[in-house]
Length: 465
Image 1: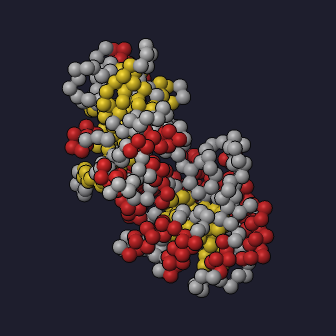
Image 2: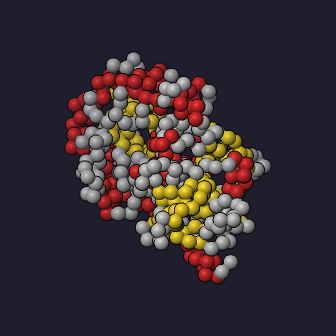
Image 3: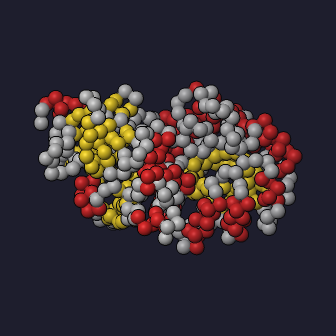
């Protein structure tokens, strides 16, 4: 290969993070030879590398335990997985194997929890945190979980919610309260629609919960939408809610938990840099310092990491079906699926995932645009980042081996946002889904979780069958 292309690849594709390598001009992901996977199952395909889920849970615990040791933090850390990131059974089962607690968002979530309990995969010590605006079905599910003896903490999203819990047939109900956060000034709306106004929390507790015969306030919860970032905005918002916890704790001896929500980022590019330990150290030390200053016990610290837990376990692999040159500048590579259907965050939220060729690492590269199969102009991918264009191996007319491309760290939200197994734009089918695990001897295990969606399934959904 010409040296200039070797230099280009070395400049563009640098693997500072664990998880990627190239051997014999083929890409490996978490020690999975993607070429073998493609040869066995074909494309398009989605894969979930199950061990990564547990690795991330343990990694987060290590960050917080290390931070707590540094500042003599006396209360424990509680890792909770928010199910909305990926509801699949293999995700929840793996998270529970690593002693994760669970955060829910809707009525159907409660059925998942009760199913796991019935199968013996969920023990009754696990915290079940119920977030979101509650519908009648959601309230009913919460009540069923309480009657099943689960450790349920409904988190009040509005003050009127309390009246429903007062009617529950239970001697005591532990609740949390969500604080409505102020969004970053660049956001169209300055106040989140979730939670109770910060200025109303103290009075609401004084007049409605204090000395209540059945309701006990155990948790305060907040979530900063922009995520956990080293910005003036994040630290100023965090301090507001730490201060609110200390004020509430002085009034409420039962209060013992502070839930900081989610927001730990995942690797979205090969240039990704984020000092996880520094950020967690700062959160824990600021909380400990302020509680000491106000002479209150620091809280049990709870997080709800979803994308961080499951995001880096996922990948989507496509084959380039053909090429098109539309003018003197643009070369299109058409893939065998759709970005809109399969990676909706890329289309709707302009989110970037790690994109790499699977094979042909030894040939000349050129500037290209990837196009999907739908008739929508927005079904394309043309840049790796704001200042890095997309280059992929040149495809020659007489090539025997097709080019394959992969999008990595796609394990969070994409399936639920795209409507997994449903009807998609231009009736582009859902890809097959492969689960990858490791046995006791370290050997990879491949399992077909779901085949590629068939025409008959879609016809039935549309009422033709």
